Length: 631
Image 1 (cartoon, one colour):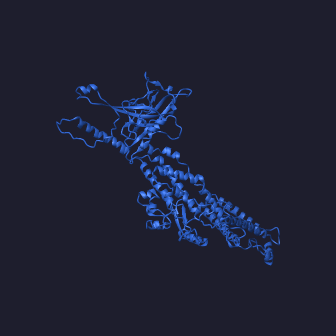
Image 2: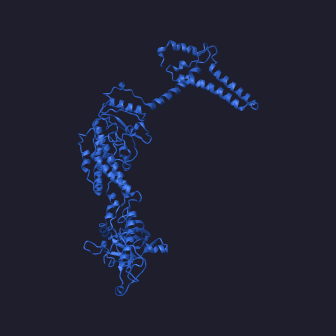
Image 3: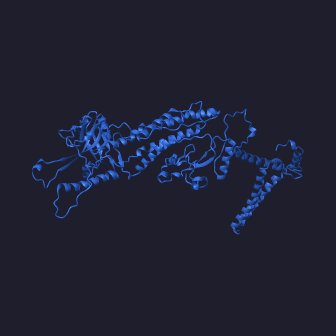
């Protein structure tokens, strides 16, 4: 008898019993079937199906590792699509963590007659059952040929055991026994692939295989230097080479073809090709924006890839997908990810898988919208600065102005905003479809702490002086922190008059100012000291005498303070000393600081000009030879 699925015919009603009522077998069975079906359906609809945890398969080899001696399988939990809860129930009583199988024999499914084990000719696939204990009909696992080509699956054999004697005699105190045997089977990997090909859930969620088919795609950088930017044609050639690179264009198209086919969406290959199918001799003026579109498509593609392994969710699992078996995978693992192994396909209320699936669906639609909504412009009416983000997902950034920003496009840009019905609160150059709130229409007037990037758009095609003036005005009016530089293409030393341009390097200017101040300080001290020698007595220097005199006074003061320290308030001493020293120091430093930045001759300004000093004569020489003095 073929295995009858419990949920193939779902019982939706049952009878309520009355006192002294004679019950029929149909009434009792209907009662049991109703609650059993509800229990099974609850597992499917509220939890999920597949391999929940455990059931890890470990091979154990002989000494020289030439043969597999046993297979250890850890305790685990799984749920079939018929609602069966699968575990090694015998391990629970033993409090054991795993089972070891060292023997095998050929398995014939003559009792369960599970249709998933039949090939296209209705013949059973070759199956071998694993056993843990020795028996006359069992063979040592070590003798199993080509075991590395095998895979493991759990099979819940179910059938009704009808007693022949019970059919002839009264069976009022008996019933038909329902047999459930959990068998561990080996099957050839190719045969298991044939079994898996009928599994709608496994095929839908075989994301390991899909990711393995998806190429790695990243946008190539446009590296500019003084040689490849000498002319406008050279600049365009650099961008043209990047967008035409085979690793980008071919791989990106292939990746999207795989994804869109999987999600049953129309191809965008032709749209992508049309954006970059221009001739190297006729590169359009909006080549930079087309390069940005390429990066947007790549960012969206990679964002989808990151989520594919986290969308194992199924709202209404197909009961016939794997109703009585669970695939545990290949014995010989050749990839980093598990092959021919069920995962746990969660209900939509469990975890974040359903939200991830919704996000992937939105990203797929966004990629289609990007490819179809490009409206690159050579010239725009107004220059606008929009706050955005540099190091985040594309959805967190402002919508670029080179897209046709319709209401439908906005719904496909940012998942979180669309989910919360706030898609019109994205920021963009185009504001007609955005919220009328001032924070959206004029975002620069509000908090921009979270923004580390500004989209400056609408300047292309304008005269650079006009564009520069407008951008600088927007920067000043909104207190923005960025710098603006204008670069000339096709410019050479022959056609540029450097005197027409004011060039200022703030970092070099600061270093020059510091160096100049230091030199002025040294020159001032030298001039003041050298010019202080007396003409009447060359051995006497008034500046040196001042220094020596001050030093003697400080020594005397220190001795007096030490002698009277027991009688004088230390706080007043400190205050007096501080006031005296700081006042003198302040007066000197302030005067010298102002002097250092004057444009006059620092040497002349610092001379000691007493009538009997050398400086008096030097000043007269300076006055007589003004034209020979470098200022």
